[in-house]
Length: 123
Image (tube, one colour):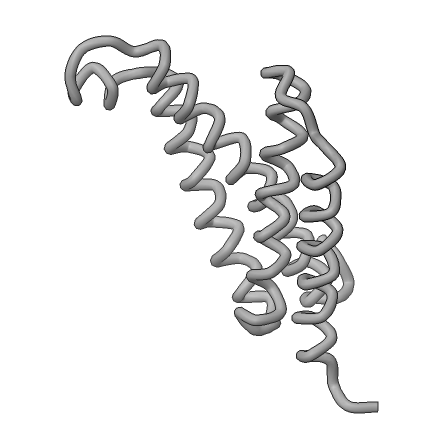
């Protein structure tokens, strides 16, 4: 897919973060739309789609770790799930993204950068 296994790993984790955010909203929809008990919830197509997203997340995690990189390098990329969740919330639920949320996103991105920098080989 990519010439660099580490680049492939980063892309896998970035995709996993999107699937993770989508899965959270599918669970939210399933919880709100499904009446009845636990069995009805487990049979909900929304919940099942959320589970499929999380299976995809685990497959992408596995592929990312096979390609190289450490947990401290790759996992912070998955933290961007919070950013994707905010964007999905804004697009589909009309939830506002305020200045304080943007600041939080900037801090997350800065933290991801610093975590990755801490794993860079010495010059």
